[in-house]
Image 1 (cartoon, one colour):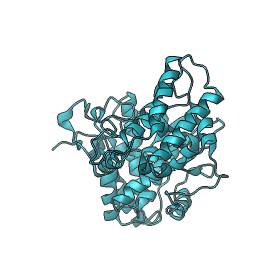
Image 2 (image 1 turned 60 degrees about the vertical axis):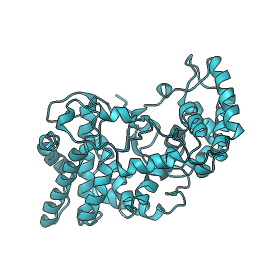
Image 3 (image 1 turned 30 degrees about the vertical axis):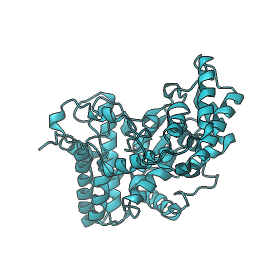
Image 4 (image 1 turned 90 degrees about the horizontal axis):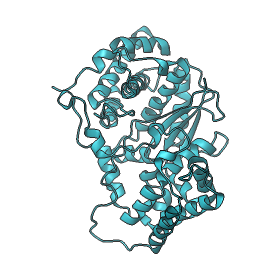
Length: 393
């Protein structure tokens, strides 16, 4: 059976209140925004429009945007610890607050432009197209080295996995944006978007992005605050790991640019190990069968695998204390949305998974070898019940 799997990073966008805060100085409202909103309303009255529920490709965690309220829906809230906010999310929301509210509403709520960079990279970019990482290419060398090192470290087949970047600046390319709209969306009646309508939408995106200096021509985390792994198995799209400029910028702003590129990539590569070895077909040893529990199982396994690689002397060989500092921020965007299909595990559960990876790396180093992915997997499964135990003190 042909399966398509798209798995996002652990990043959760809490945009419930973003883009609508009072500003000390009210920016000039560009007329393009008002005119675009009127044009969209007229088209919507005729049956045209966009909806996140009508994305034609598997949406998966990549295109989900969890609102703040969703993070607080826990089965047993008293048993688990979830922070009300995190430094990374606080940074993101502060960046979004700089956007003109009307421009944000148009781009995010009406044009769904935040989906375009990721899907443009997924559908149209390949290893044959020029790639750079970071707003100005500042992470290109470290990403290329990390790709090479991770593939060398693990024993799974990986030569077909392409490392690609997603850039918000693509939103100023009308031709690419129009093609992505056509590939992604259908009209209310299920018919494909016409080329004319797709170009109309792409033009609105182009003009809106350039109308607000806060968006810096698309170099804003609103559009690229993610990273994801994709496998189409027998389908036409090659295996990919896509790194967003925005997520790299966020960790850099918090002082983790020395470890975040390696850490995020290692986590996403772990999902490809799961694809190759069939771990997505398993049920957790706890016996849980809900989609939220299945997602948590594979996410925590990816956390443990990345921690193992990052601190192994034959892996990234990064300082354990430094990796732990990064992972504390990385994992603090864990969640308590136990019934949500995208549940990644609570922050404490994710830290337990990382500690497990650290400890296995320490033991393996004393024996002077790298565990196979199956050997690591078996040890993780044996430890899983302890990792997911209630974590409130």
